[in-house]
Image (cartoon, rainbow, N blue to C red; front, side, top):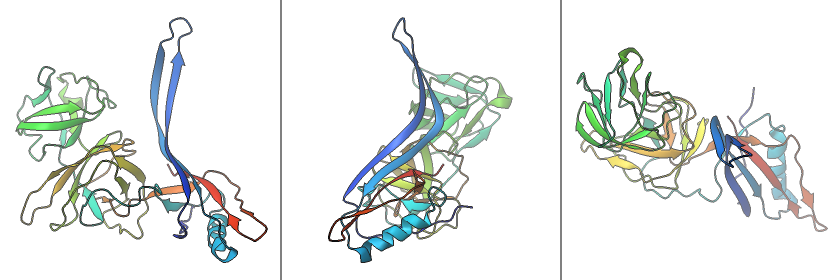
Length: 302
């Protein structure tokens, strides 16, 4: 079983390359030049980092860290080295997933003219939804990977206006048994969160990262990240006032790797991912006055 190894915090990296790798198949026709693509679930972060020249008494901390990782066996918490300072001013360390729509057995009508979704049974599937929330519709006419929609307006508890984030055009659903409207599900490119306390407020901005935890009891100093995502649009904040928790709709990349239940922690500060070394071997070099140089490559744990 993989162990979690603590990465040294000093000195800072002097050079980094941080990248998102996607598994996308592409086939080009030799006759027309047209390309057909297929997106697969595989998507993860990679990084290459370089430390400044170090004397041996400093370098040994990094040497020990790399050796304890045992090649690609053990893991460590890591973040984009050039985005450690958050852009938003959300006032505490963490938020929590919140299930605001979880409707099954629905008959839906989708109007492509005004981009509305209507539950024809008027059973109030959107009673807890907020403008800026993200939903995924699945059914016999809409595949599970149909994509994410953002609620831009709420007409009533049974009718909303949506904007496709990465989605195909929705089709009206008449097969009640197979139709669902859910949030925070695998494949979603937007997530619905709530503040972790009634005193927490503030912005989550484009370019911020989030570290997704495993449970409601996670703490900022010890959580094991299950995914590392970037916020790709300023989050929509609903200030509910008083003792009520503020709520957030947050657009992310890459898409959510697994469905998340209510109250699982999401960390804004520090936002970390779980990484491992990309190679089984480690090395370092030294010059004639024993200044050590260390560069290593790492990859997000999936």
